[in-house]
Structures are given as C-alpha cells and as structure tokens.
Amino acid sequence: MTMRILIVLLITIALNGCSMLRISYSNIDSFAIWTANDYFDFNNEQREQFNKRFTKIHQWHRQEQLPEYLLVFEDIHKRVQNGIRGNDIIWLVDTLKIRYSRIAQYSANDLADILATLSPSQIDTLKKKLRKENRKFIKDHRSDEGEVERRKEFERRTFKQINEWLGPLSEKQEQMVSNALKTVPLIDQLRHQENLRRQREFLEILELRNQDRSIYTEQLRQFFINWDSGRTEAVKKQFDLSWAKRAEIYEGLDKTLSTEQRDYLRKKILGYMEDIRSLIKPTSM
Image: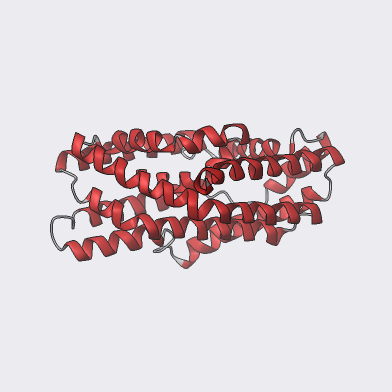
C-alpha cells in the first residue's frame, strides 16, 4: 500500500540504479504525491498537506538517515572485500528492516493525520487500487500457475538481481545457482496471503479514523512500525528459511567470482557511496 511503499522508497531507492540515484532521490517528493494520489484520489487540501508533510520527512531523511546509509554501504564494501558469507546477507536484510522501522517511527503520526481525512469514496479508491496490485502480483510471480512456472519466474528474477550486481555469470556459475535455487522454498503465494492479511488489517484500522482518534493513531503507528507483526510461527519459519537458503547460494557464488566480477560489484557499491555523499552535501552547506 502507498504509505509503506513511500517509506520503503526512501530506504531502497538506491537499488533502482546507481546512475539514477541522485535524480530519483531529489525528485521523490513529486513521485510521492503522484503515488499517493493514485491510491486515494486526494482533493487539493489533502494533496497540499501530504506534500508539506512528506517534504518534511524527506528533509529529515536526507539529513539524518543518509549519513547512516553511507556507513552501511561502507560496511557492505568491507564485507565484499573479505568475501561474502551467508550471515552477511542476513545482516543486510535485518539492517534494511531497522532502517524501515526508523522511518516508520518518524513519519507514522503525520501519515495517520492525513489518512484520517479520507472520505468513504477515497477508501473505495484505495480498495480498487489494492485489488489491482494484488492481481498484478499474482501475474508477475505467476502465482496462480503450477510450481514449474513459478520456479521459472523465481529463477528469472534471481538471475536478474545477481546480474545487476555482478554482471554476466559464467555457464558453470549459472548452472550452480540454478541447481541451488531448487532448494529454496517458493514463498510467492505466502507473500500474497500475507499482503492480503495486512491489507485487511489496514482497512480495519482506517475505519477507526472517525471514532477514537488516539486508538486509531496508535494502531496505525504500530501497523507501520511493526510490519511483520501478526505472522504465525509457521509463516515466519518459511520466510526465514527462504532467506537462509538464498544466503547460502550467495555465499557459494562468492567463492566462484572472477576478479572482473568482484571488481564490478565493488565499483557498484562505491558508486552508491559516491551518490549518497553528493546527496548529503546540500544539508551541510
């Protein structure tokens, strides 16, 4: 949903491509209002309030969070130089969760105030958008097809991510990764079910917006901050197992990297660090 998407955007926008980081981050305010309007069809007053509050969040993020991201990338660079281990991948996943939580804590009250102004027709607009995104998720991940087709899509996505960070793999590396991916549990259907559950919870909280404001605000704040809350132990184990298996694959792949591939990865990381430094500079002038 849009508020979580916008929060996550502030964390992960660098991953969309190093060469586009400076442009994308600097213009995220415009993208944010466009995205929010697409979900809710804001009126002029709501649009103005959203833009004002999101601009504040963006400025805080640039000043307070980007320096911390630079430290994270410096840590990643050191780990890459020493050789990637499975626990490095788990560390990165946990680090991103922490970054998300910090942004959610800072912005939750502002987002709650804006969402409290939604009309019933705007809630209907949100529901339609969510249904559209749910259908897109299923189509993109081929989640309504058989396991063979779902695995093909999972493998395609994984190789695309790996190639973005390492460049082309050798035939031997591709075969090694392809074989290893067969051991990773497919969680696309589980992710879809979790998305549906969280969407229902979100809509239930929004129904409180015109009742007890303090309860509504606190529940929405907790909803944004504790994104993984409400998962059963069985679901948690599946998600953890999926990440653990993928971490094993990346550790194994690291041992086969050529000098060119490792340099490609290092340059990618250093490029992110350079762009982050350039984004931090305006706040220190």
